[in-house]
Length: 138
Image (spheres, rainbow, N blue to C red):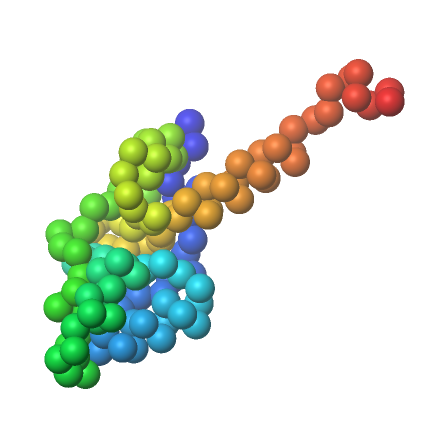
């Protein structure tokens, strides 16, 4: 059975609770991601901040320049352990509104799995399957 750690993205883009919220918006836009994990200095996962979490900035006319990730992030974060079944992760993402889920080991962030990661994995599986004998002869 495949485990979460087998397809998780390990090259992580994260924020800290005191990261200015506009810096997070820059990261989201620059990297083309829909959200990111929030961690302590030792990589302990404390929250997740997404595009949806910051949409209130569009409507709010008060000065938000001093606001940080802590003011917007979802906490406590939902996450999976790196040894949990990839099917469980897929099931979770299918049944919830989340587009990504952090992956931890001992409470420390070690990866993330997004819906895109799962789509790319499905495509990889399709391309690795051998062609049926009937198709080879055509």
